Length: 423
Image 1 (cartoon, rainbow, N blue to C red):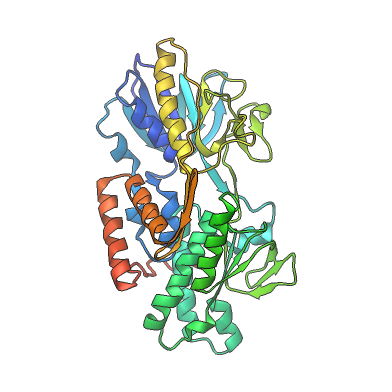
Image 2: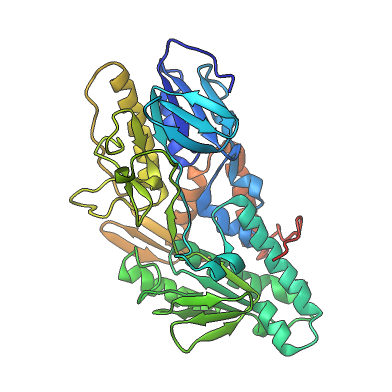
């Protein structure tokens, strides 16, 4: 891999998500050699992927080069590679570009889409966990509009204009609201030969309410906002099959749609090589102690979504969102420095800053202990928090400009089919 030999302990970080980059920044130029490995050369701000999917933002405004994060740190290196196997006895990892030894290994590989074993749904639906996938959804939505404009029959047109989103968590709710705004603001202007009333957005959620991780107050507000935008909300509804045109559910509901977007769950993305006992099978997450050490290993750590740390407050592990990943990355950085100096490490304690979701223009919900509210003020808070959380000043400026332009003009400027998508 052409990583120079050094007298400094080598920390290898697999994954450039929220956890990985916060760890890398914390230990940069701190008497440790840092090697960051990822299969992409950029960090993705996943909370805003849905805006790329719905033509609100271009992908370069929510992605940031990983090399740029570490460019000022002479003892930090980045390698573009996929890690295939860990060899803990040799303190070695096998990757697509070669082998690399480590003193400390940190797994920050995050999650991947969980289709719960349904191969038909996996084959025919659209996941949204990466920038390329978000661009695929954007292209498919716009291509469907074009095909609907030349459809010969009403049934064919309706299939192109029916959008089914599975999963009523924050991702599904935010995407449903964004597509509804496309219907209300863009379709009547760009496609005046189409009847916007022929377009339908269906949000399917398996539990009793949307936004199950949030408060009931937030769920009720979000459902009210969604319905006001024209979204059809179906709770207690699970998708059992999708053949590319017909959506089958556990109820009498059947939908004809050319587009099914799967936002119904995630599973961990582990790397092979560690003891089977270190992995929780159902969740595909590594069992870690209060210092984020993987069970059975002193020098291998897991942070972020891939880590399962149980406690009295979180018996099923921390929520798989950005804040636990960021906090674990920063603390592990400090603990690795302590470990290198043979000092005791500090246990992780998650500080819950609350949760939020946006449904559309002036419509959002926020749970901040002990306050729960929705509407314009919640929407403003959501925008501010996400804007400040973006990596890089340029990205913040571009996103702020796009949001301001969209707000004033009721427009989504990124509705371009750059790379046509074929199902």
